[in-house]
Length: 544
Image (cartoon, rainbow, N blue to C red; front, side):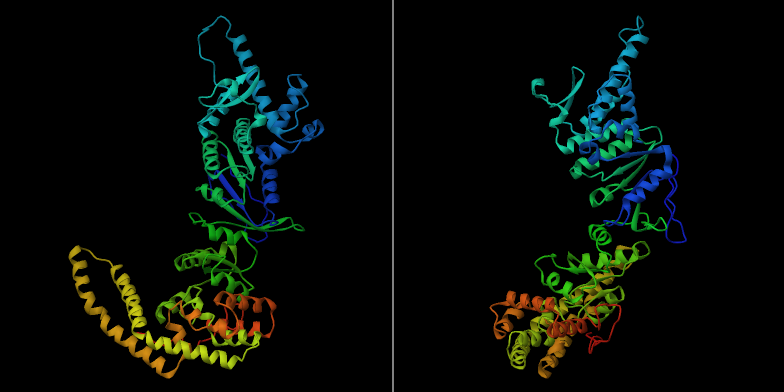
């Protein structure tokens, strides 16, 4: 199998494909130059190039003049058939021509066999033909279907149905037409071809898509396959493929900015969508991407970023780590945001070192209760912002005082869990060593001491009225509706309060800037770019 050459790169270092790589997947954003990249590869492949497109084959009519000018092997074969008078020039779609060629070649094979074998071994089995291969592959993909040959035409039917129910290719679904097209087209691919396939997922269900291309790769191991796609399911299904990401195209220099994805890199949905999205830095956040507070708030706080909601904090952490590991591939900055919850200072510092931003409040709901946010909403609603914030502050401090022991216990449980997880991850050469280690854990952990320490610290926060410190440790989702901040601002409920915050941010007035400043300071940054950090007032307070 010959090695494929890659188009000229913008950078001085020209990428090369790994040796003996039979499959290439080309990805990139719309307008990045993927199609021109594949076309250049096809041009450089010369006579080996064999281009397939189900969309064009099924729905793009061609005149005979266009066929004669085409470089398509299929169309050249069909033109030859017209010249011999063995088929009609009226067929316009490439699929129709393919099926006609199959039947023509089937007839020629049978005639040749009959003439060459006259009088010799009349019971000998007929040799396999291209049509036999197409039928066998079709029935592998669709085991409940069958193909019939009747009066020189192909008919399709369900297994077990009466032959009178058979139907012509015209009545196939778009997906079925695509499958029969690809199977038939690969049958005519020359030995050692470089097969370029545009949007191989088009019209196909994911299960059919994977089964089809796995089967065709097995049938034609002599060929290189080069796919251009936007589909994650397809890209990840080609497990041994070289993945090329085309970033952009310099038309004046006829060069591409592209990179080859490192081998064995997990191409997860969030990574793929971030790469394929706008060319902004990426920020992964918690939440569902539609209804969560995170997804409503953060795009307006960090407008310079493409925001991707992933659900859990673990997914955010893993996606940010993976994306940053691929920085040399995509050249994009990426960050994550996770709730602080009950993480201690060391955990927070570790995450921030990995570009995971952790706010100086316990959870995203607490961001909505920052002093700067409350005052901005109150002003926008025409209320006395000193009075509104004062009442909210007094309620939260009072409520926190009632729940000090409950909150201290929750923080203790979290700390114990983290310590146990770290201790258990140690290496032990025997079960006896593990047992001895586990016996010593209660003494080492000292849960009672932790709990008393948390209680003392929380009482200090409460007694001093340290509102910012309380927001940093107080996990209580009922706090937002409980403090009645919405009612004090003249709003009906917390949903209307959240909607008002997002409305203010979209208006981009002075109150919007006050909200953004308060939130960014909560993340220890002073601009929309989190790479410029500032110290928070008490972010390094020791909670041990």
